[in-house]
Image 1: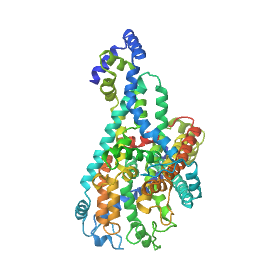
Image 2: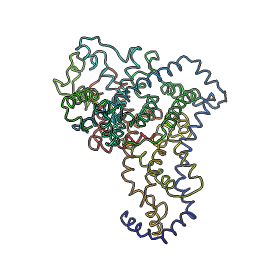
Image 3: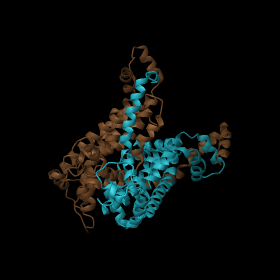
Image 4: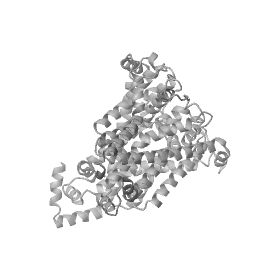
Length: 315
Length: 278
């Protein structure tokens, strides 16, 4: 079928036919446009734009799921939220998580990509292995991590004991729970960032390295500092913003491994939103937490579009 | 970069560092396989060994399938991911074609809306969408799992960019041939876009097979559970007692995607990094 239409396509290059066709397109085609884009538009309103407006509106109400009525309460939800110790803990933990996972996953992703690309052997093997955690269902792997971190029978503490160190209840200790989740977050994100960096490195023109060499850049480090790093600027900005947005969304590992605990030490924004809205059914308050989360994500998007003038290409 | 290859020591260092990193990346997978293959007595021992003395993988798998209806959960995962992807294509392709190739009033506004919607994180709309599904009375059903994702603005964007590159002459010729605009989408545009649709399909299936947040919110019934929800419940029920079967269950849940990935890794990496645009 497509071959037939390709053949027809060649015939249509004849100017007369082309002109007629484009006249048809200009005049009589609009109804089709509406019909074709209509369902998508309707669903966009119903599932995205409507709910986005809805969540902002809800944050100014005292709506509770199942309640027969609700009323506008202005900024009361926000006032309650800003007065709530748990919200501030949650926000601080989320920012800590982002501040650890983003540099970790970006630096390791870049390092891995550079190492893989600096030689020719086993490239695709390494790429596959490092990418595996991105693919594997995070919930299943979080449960594996939990057993790896098991105080008595886990791999991590087993290795620590072999090295003559103290074993530790990583996920049950309020001093370490959040950091353990950060490690899982980095482990899962490195491969994704690596692939984006690999695509960036491959697209750097070879002549730039030749030119740098003529200019006296002889060590691997000077080639990196003079060519690779500046050329990766846009990709890096992009990877940082993507990693940050994904880190703000951290939820799966928290919900299944720590439930925000012990004593709120791993409580994060989306988890607070989840418990308030879907366990205590305080939709209005949950919506206010969501708006804060949304603010951070939009801020990051804004940073990306302000700093990254030109579009970033990948893969 | 090839200038580095004559220096032998560098090549050795490169492999040492990368292999060390690879071991860390693989550690959870190795630990999962190892634990899933051990009998209870070996799991609960402080003696650290990866290869079990008694191989119990089969027993653990059997226990996992007995304790949890894993076949059913895998089937749920398949039904949900296929239904979502099918609907996404059905709705996004015509819209993408209209945005790329047709002129109509409001087209640019519509496209701007699409680009804007790409920025909305799925968690942000969760509460109102939940309330909407509650009003419609479809919570705790396949519909609740599928409907919110029937619209993929990202899919529309991606396919629109792709359709832009299809020559107009191809479409004009199809029109003269008497094919309707709707027919053009499926009989002319779709065949040219198979690689892009495949990449989008991998992206969509991986995202929704692995999704935990949404099924957790809208589901109650055990028989509707998707794989991530099922393994989380398995863990909550067996917490601290049955690690062998639990690891076996985790293995089963990640197996379909991991195996598919190992067979077609280039396509998978391409498909998943599409999120990069977001």
